[in-house]
Length: 428
Image (tube, helix red, strand yellow):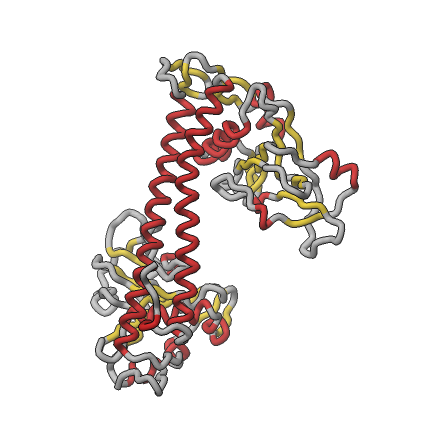
């Protein structure tokens, strides 16, 4: 049996015919992160783009015979148990190391590649996850959902013949590799930026001798001062819940969710709130204001961004401190990079007061935070040097996003025959 152009099949047709094997992963919850034993994949090792992410690796040590559970190159990995939104994520295994899946995942192994292409199958199941198919057929449990082998086996495959399956898989995997290449560049430039910031904030740009201070080594000509002595003022935002439904006469309000880890202000996410005109006037942001997230989960406290003037006025929420640098003693972008560097170095995490799932580093505390204070012109040079690396990173982030959009479009159009492989112009 093979897939023919005028007759779709379900996966069960292939399993009953011996062309496909479906089995769950290894039932083991005892893993370690010491690189001892066999690599143990869990659901979050599959990305939303259908790729394998081994940034977080776990391993299992066991005396049990694992031959029946070991992944083979070319296996399809299906996430059979997770939250409703994530159940059904799928990836294709191309690696050679010894690895097993958790029992929250399923192996689909093509035994007869003359009937079905495994990589095509992985991409098609990923499309069905994007479309919400597995969410619609899953069994609900407490805080989880699952798709068993029987329901997975009932998945209908599109009537695409094997030669075209191989071509579709090749095209989509090529785009995936391009995405991975951009991810590697982004990771490299991000690490470069981190190393550069550490060097610049401790050594400067003039190859000066260093002196030891209470905040560590800094160039001899620099000073270590409390932050409040280097800026015009620091102020809290408005303490009021942001409604889910935007009020008709609301003003835009920057909240903690609108600042990402890299210090970007996500203007498109900003919501609205209704406040008295007096409050809105007092808290209206000015071009160049530094916004510091003083209360959040421990790993996010200290996120810092710069507000750039918009056509509409904006204010800030209560968990954001507005810092006006004034551009006399401190350069705002120097402060932004310094604060984000401190967050990466876990300075705020160490200094903050801890509460349930949150950390606080309030106005009084950050006002007294000692920071390195180079001359203003050196602050500008340092900020520009860091911005150069950021610019390169952002360029590749944009390329990655464009490739991800292309992947999703091609995945849908090729699988639904909206676009046929032989009509696809790949020259661009």
